[in-house]
Every structure is written in C-alpha cells, then in structure tokens.
Amino acid sequence: MKRILILLFFSFKVFALAELDFDFNYSKNKFGENRQNYSMSRTYAGSIAFYFFNLTAIEFNYSESQDKTVVNHDTSKATNLAIENETSVLKTSTYGIGIRQALAHKNSFLIPSLSLGWARQSFTDSAAATIIDKSDNSRTIYDTGESIITYDSVFASFALKFRLTKTFSIKGGVKTAFRAFEWNQAKDQVHYTAGLSWIF
Image 1 (cartoon, rainbow, N blue to C red):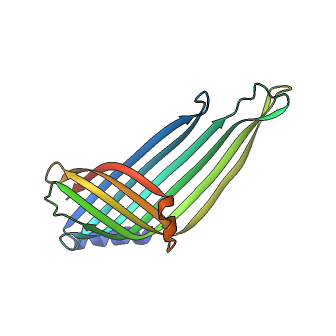
Image 2 (cartoon, rainbow, N blue to C red; image 1 turned 135 degrees about the horizontal axis):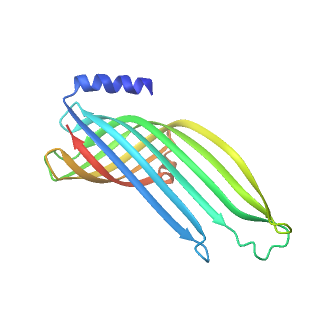
Image 3 (cartoon, helix red, strand yellow; image 1 turned 180 degrees about the vertical axis):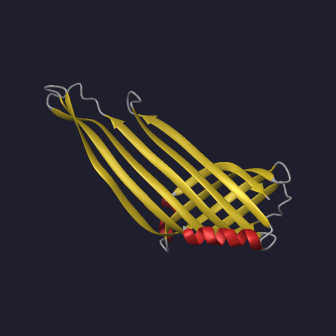
C-alpha cells in the first residue's frame, strides 16, 4: 500500500489529465417458504487513472465487498437439539494497478473503456450457527471465527461512461478478478456496478 501511495504522488506530478471513479453495488434477495432467509451483497469501489497518452492511462483501484447469507430454520417440530439459524459472511478486499484503454475520445458522449492489470485480493470468511435446545428453550451460539486468505490476482473490467458535462459522467461496468493465470476462474468473481466519474 505504501508503494501505491508513492506512485500516486509522483503520478500527480507527471500527468496532466486524471480520471476519478466511484462505483457501488447492492443487492438483497429473500428466499424460503415464508421468505425467512436472505442473502445480501454490497460492494464499494474506487479508482484513479492518469493518462500518459490521449486514450491510455495507468489505473490504481481499490474495492471492498461483503456477501452475507442468513438462513432461519423451522424448529417448531423439533423435540431436542436443532439448528435455529445459520449466518455466513464473506468479505473481499482488492487493490490493483493496471492499464486503462479508453475506446473513444474524452469529449464523446459515450466512452467505453477496458482495464487490465495486477491485483492483490484478501478474503475473510466467517460463519456462525445458533443451536436451540427445545427441552428448555436455551440457545448456544457456535462461531467459527475468521479465516483469511490472500493471494495475487489479475483484474479485468469494462466500463461505459455517459458524459453529462465537460468533466462529469455517469457509468456502468462489469469487473472480474481471479487468481493469476487461472483464466477459467474469471467467471467466478463477476461484479456489475454503477457509479460516477470525474476528469480533472
């Protein structure tokens, strides 16, 4: 992270044109016979790109996401120990550096762009379950604690910007990140986002 901040500092000194992006995604789904279960996903992301050619830039990006699933079981017919509910949480953080290639001039109304580069991913996984003893209605919570995995990855993204003013655009995009050289995993971590973009 320290190296990235140093690179950002020198990039401000060298490149005249920069682009700042913010993206967000949120979804929630309820399921089960009585809609008693749900899964929730939330992603925040930001990037800054410094153009050293008219359409080509160095991109620095960071994203943080959380996926949570809660399942509530019907224990009304249980007579002894039963699982009342289960919760699983996966937190993912990714930072990376790569090349962004715009496919249209910055003054165009529609500006598609492609990005590709190196990323560092960290996954934090945790789970918990509540066990109910129907004989006395006592409850016990079992928590697995947090398990963390970190590895080098490749990121790739496509974005489509709609320019509203000289410096401001709205955008939609799709991004994936996967373990380096494991190309068959590209479809396993796909995120669709919407956001804002500024050129300065």
